[in-house]
Length: 270
Image (cartoon, rainbow, N blue to C red):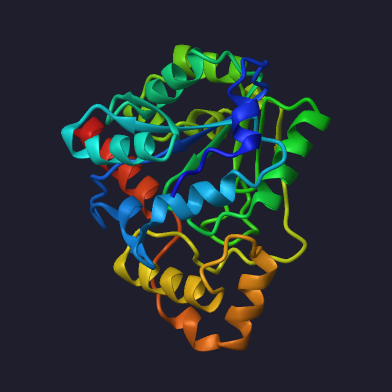
């Protein structure tokens, strides 16, 4: 499945990259190892997500940011096979990985996405980018105060803001969770949260557990494995078949972040 389109060829032509999307992906997830390449209709989940991201009208270039670990060689192979740009950096210092990935392109804005959101809606991506640029923000997100389903998270920050994070973010949790420093220092940045018209934050469309993947596979099957459906289509399906929401409802949002902060607090006490 070749993903290099006429549009992406234009993006590779040397024109100034204003909005650079960086998609964070690795194989060594603790809860569901190898999740980003789990199969959906005999194709890797990550490719489904990339095809949806590429429908954004605001993103100039997409790059997959993976690690230098041997386990992630397979992600690099997937990118090379499908003409997808990639960067390899630190496993644990994700902040530095993002910075080094962006450095080559010197973009104005960076769109941070994670490889466990195969239903990400390009319309939502474009909405967050538009608000960010229109209001001249340092950081814009739809998950500071979540109203979208988990799995629709979009974060946009200026490259200048990322440079400030590299200098000031000195805790391990800050380096592991790229934008955590911003959210813990709101007075230092011009920030904006993009709200949905309806609070759907209790719906889980991300993939961290086996049950999450089960739900995603069902949704894609119901959508005939197309890549042109949006969040509204998914919500209509879930409301029509309410039993689907029972599959993964017992998992909490941002469990990984909570675990990191808990471990960091424990280390400080020792």
